[in-house]
Length: 259
Image (tube, rainbow, N blue to C red; front, side, top):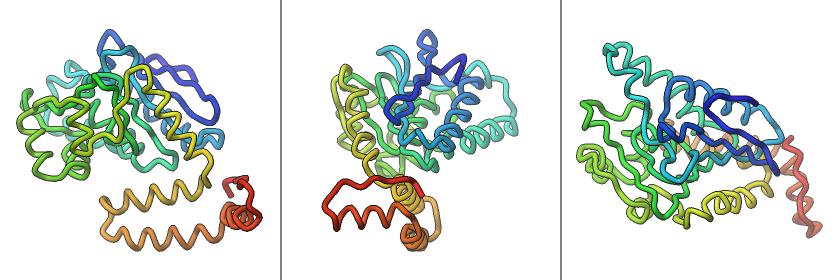
């Protein structure tokens, strides 16, 4: 996979994706979003990939927002289309992926950058990272799902406060309110993401995908319970279920085949 704005590699069943626009603080321009959309499709369609680690180049920024110059003269209709396309092809696509995405937040995660991290299933922050949604300082609001996902993660009151004040918060505060799962020193950031995925890689891939689908349905679907029930039932039809049970009875490690 060759990209202009991303560095990608697959190692030990993990797809590493680095947004590589360090001089622009890894800001999300149209080309970068297009490439991210392609990477998400690749991750979902590639059996070798069991998890994804997403980070930014350098130590200063994960993603410090969107490239404002690209849409500074947009009409309302163009703005809606920008948000709709971005949500469908990148942000929602990450959340609805069959593979777990771990955001390794190595620095500033602002605006679209924090929205990108929130779309991931797990967030790990370097101890010096800072996060925020500053859109109202530009006369905008978050448009890539930020108002929805922040509310889901931290609650309505805190989400409103962060969005309408546009204030940044530290990694410590982000962990305190449930915005990130873990804080680690910068040097340990990717290693912590790998540690989490090392456990996931030992589990049944189809069951992992089903579990994530059911959890996401709890906040995005009218009846998440029904989604869970149906996903639970489908697990019984998989070879991985039979292998998992056999391994348990035989007191050995399972060898899952994703079938």
